[in-house]
Length: 241
Image (cartoon, rainbow, N blue to C red; front, side, top):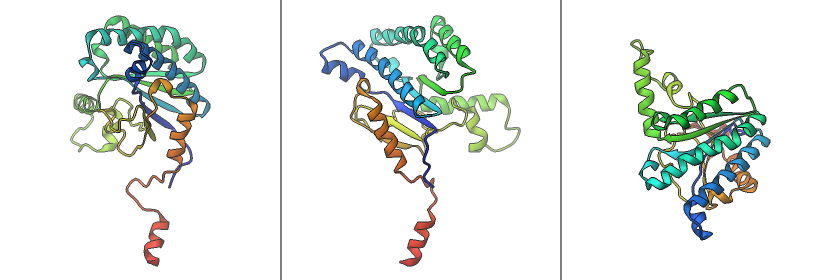
């Protein structure tokens, strides 16, 4: 019952601020270093034939941070799209943004839509950036869109007819990696992570590399995923007892 291949990895990229503090630098320095880590991980996932990677880049709660940091993060998003979208396209990576994008300014939205449009036919790796995203928002937004679509037509709501309205339209990660030591989901894809294997590491996000990614993948490959069922071996063992 345990698969030998990972299709979808999600990552909570945590620790930029602590990494900067450890280096005696302002938090902005850590966020810039975190962009380089994204490039490393995207490249590593492509080499390992991972089909989908979802990165938690900016949560709906991150607006509570100081205004100067929020402004810097938004400008960094714009800058990073300009710098890296062509390279991602050349590497056959499809870019997708999820979250409540309506709260961003028109300049950033234009860059987001252009990146998605440019890469929409790419087939190597689907790269999802979750920005202004929250798991509770995703569920409520999906319910509202489901009601508006009038697709129920008297039918009851089921996971099968509800999931297509979620941000990732039914795609769920096999493995979640969270860096920097915290062991919580932080409102990240609450529905989609229902049966995801969780891997927590003390490694700060700017320090992540291929070796750390491989440790997480090995953790996943050693795990038996039963999804509430039991294996034939367990049944035989109980009969012998």
